[in-house]
Each structure stands twice: as C-alpha cells, then as structure tokens.
Image (cartoon, rainbow, N blue to C red):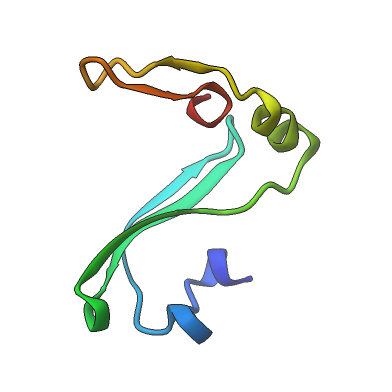
Length: 79
C-alpha cells in the first residue's frame, strides 16, 4: 500500500512528502510535497474508493471558499 508506507515508485520516485492529509471522518487521504527533479510542488489526493466518495464526486455544485475572497470550489470536493 503506497499511501500507508510512503513507498513511491514509477513516476512518483523521488517525491518528498512534506505533509500527510489523513481525515478518516471525511475519508480523505493525500500528500502535499515536492519533486526536486522537477522543481515542482504537488498536492495529491487518493482516488475515490467508497460509495460516499463517489456520492461526493457527483455533488458538482460550486460553493464559496471562505479562505479566498471571491473564490469558489467544487462542493463535493470541499466537503
């Protein structure tokens, strides 16, 4: 399990995870990190694995994002 062991292979070899996103209540997991070889920062999330995830994906209405004036975000993703 790549997520749990932080073993990055293939295209993600060399990825340095700086922050782990793990919210069991919302069933959201991912990383914030960087790839030195590309001088790039990445915010990545695990794909949908549960019925609740897929239901949130279908909630495609935009909602205001309180941390950014005038910004909106996909409501299902923001949950």
